[in-house]
Image (cartoon, rainbow, N blue to C red; front, top):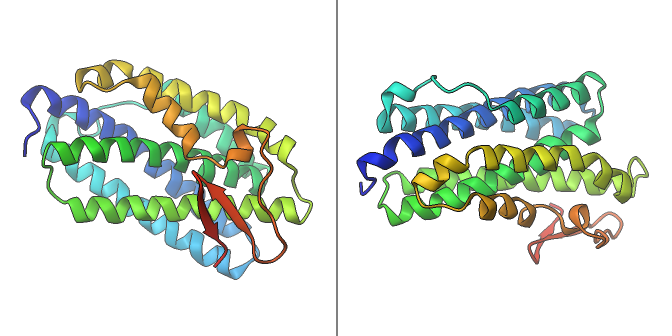
Length: 234
């Protein structure tokens, strides 16, 4: 593997942040599965919870291989702690729409953006386990698409509207920016631009959530466009 000695600890610390995010996602998906009434959604969320737990174990193994001394040694970032507190409050209020917005859409969008950037770097460094990394990224994408569909259904059924979702997304988006910018020193050591990583998060979100563009909703067979790619309701 072409990861240099001085890159091992920064990459391991980035993976520690991702591991913490996966554990947060696991806890949220597990709680959501107990709140939803639709059996299909419940099944998906139970599957997601299992996958998130597996992802955390994958990251933990990678951290142990790259820099064993960093295993379990990094505390939560303050912004991530605040994000978790907001998400937990939404769960306590049983506000499923907000939890889908915060976890499957925004947090998974952050995870996708970071994993995509990290994957590009790992490919350049001839990192092993490429197939496993691709499977993990595909599962994260599926979780994100599920969340987007849930928000679209909430809009269609009158349980939410675009302006309220945009307003509710703002504190979560501000915290994702803070999380990435807090990691700027780590990113500098592996020659990555923290501001570019923060901007990437927006590209993995529905355009209507961060702009004035309306979601493409058409009755029962809905299509939502993310990054100009149509995602059809299955």
